Image 1 (spheres, one colour):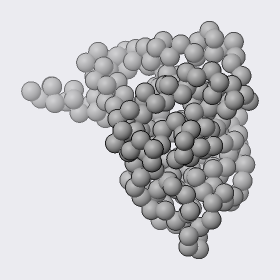
Image 2 (tube, rainbow, N blue to C red):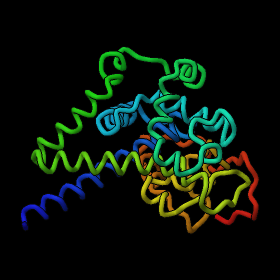
Image 3 (cartoon, rainbow, N blue to C red):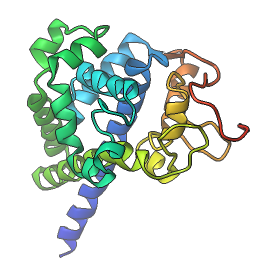
Image 4 (cartoon, one colour):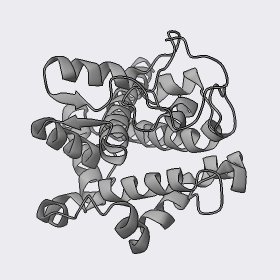
Length: 254
């Protein structure tokens, strides 16, 4: 019994750690750097992020970028790939993966919204093979922690990552504070779980900002990582302060 409980607790802890890493590279690399060009990563850091995305999520960056940019182009109106305003937040929470895959597999969407991210030879040889990347990631967990902990940790990570990503699209466009005049909401608890992505109203107000926290009481873990990288000159932030695309409902006090 003791051994079984220890296995479960260790697997949950490892799964949480892997999800945190995946969320950081998702928000920093896929979202803020690639999709919005809010920051530039040095090539070694970018390659590390690319590899980590591959083994923890299997995501093809150009597809993720295309779907996200289309979401911004048609936020909560017809054409949005995953709007809870159109489909209901429960539907988006439960079917977010299917909605994403449908749009990501549309060559017209990718060609239009990710034209600046061409397919490379390395993509064709390695990174476009999502199942291989996930197999490598699971293999690492099994090799390090054993098959029981490794497989259970992978299961925990899968559910936490997909659930958190869906929540940003579903709950983040239905609930939360709206200091800016857009349809997204700020949810601090969700931001803590997704490395800052839960500050979604702020993001839609200033999509080119590398920092998603606009007020002193808002916490953006992804920004802490970005700021640390800038100290070592491994990243460069595009704008020193948010450039608002939608106005604030009340004065902003940083």
